Length: 490
Image (cartoon, rainbow, N blue to C red; front, side, top):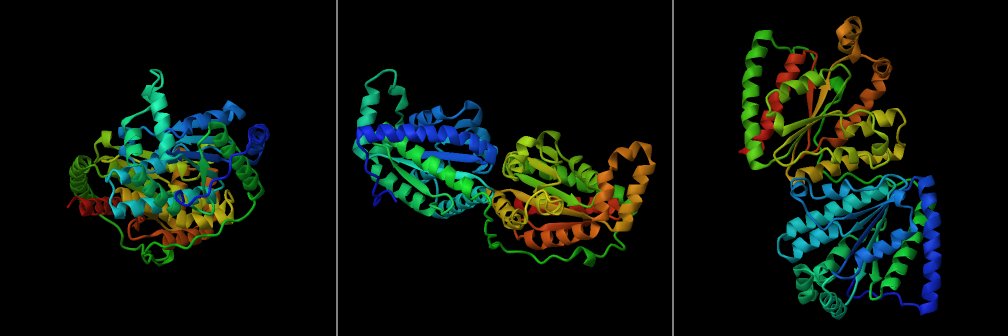
């Protein structure tokens, strides 16, 4: 894209001045329309060292109310970032609906730098590119405007700028070893940049190559493409997005009605004995997980009153309290609702060597949000594939993903609801919403069957815990967790 790119011709001084004025005014007006349309705008600026990414952002944001934008400088990779999935530090920076985020360098810079320096083999390179394409497509499918700019300058221009900056003691610090190395190996970098741009040039998130030979000319190109993109995005907001085909291997799952519930019990004596043994074993495995820095994600879904809380408690009792966190998931807060629905889960992922337990999960998208009308039909139909992609990225990161559906029948649920309602110290556990959801049991069951069928992948399978006897389900959960952890700790 860079080698054969024919860049736009720089206009004469007076035309440049007039177009800049018009573009700045257009963006100033658009910022209020973005807020009204609840359009989130993510602007990524990549490019050569000394190409002017920071100064270009500085000029563009002068036309926007400071309350409506954030600038994120992503060059510095912290220790915390290294212990999370590759895209974590970018995903957590995505804007709320109606606001801008400008990124000074991003996922392109990180990936190409590792590739150029020989720190990434061919397979990892291809997997990273595939993950980036999924990430960007998911953002645009979920209503984000993603604008990607590459600021391009020649080798000679880059060298000239470095020499100029080095002559002034107040600007010399802006040149680092990486910039000098890049200029010296300009062709090598150009080849990798070209490969990256070509592989990630998506119809919904194309690359714009900017001639950054002059500051005001670069600013004008970014402003005009940005304002045009905003207008187009607002016009297309009502359009439905195609539902992508699942490309991940799925495991055959039974329907809930086919799962036998009889005989799934355990005596009190046998329960106490095995519980102690299993918890002791799990505690040992937790120490090994930490030493090997393997992240673990345990996700719980299930019927109301199925016993998720008690099940989680028996697992966490075995763990070092410094090495796990339980996330009870309720209705999204306003700042969560204003972002991609996976954002609030991405920001709760564990560090390597730690365990995150989710009491309710991202599967709310294809259950409660679907059935209660909190998202469109197009949204929840796309979500099966988006969730499979999300979990694939976690698996590629090295995470162990354990997903439980805690299962009971309607009679057992009614018995437990009634007991809660008639027991003062347990009445907080039962709400009017629980009773309303019970009336929708049949439609929820259909939704769960579809969820299990479409999201039980080879790398993140569903495990059904029969919980008519809670003690039986607790032991089964512990056995399953131990079995899955031993697979990666061999």
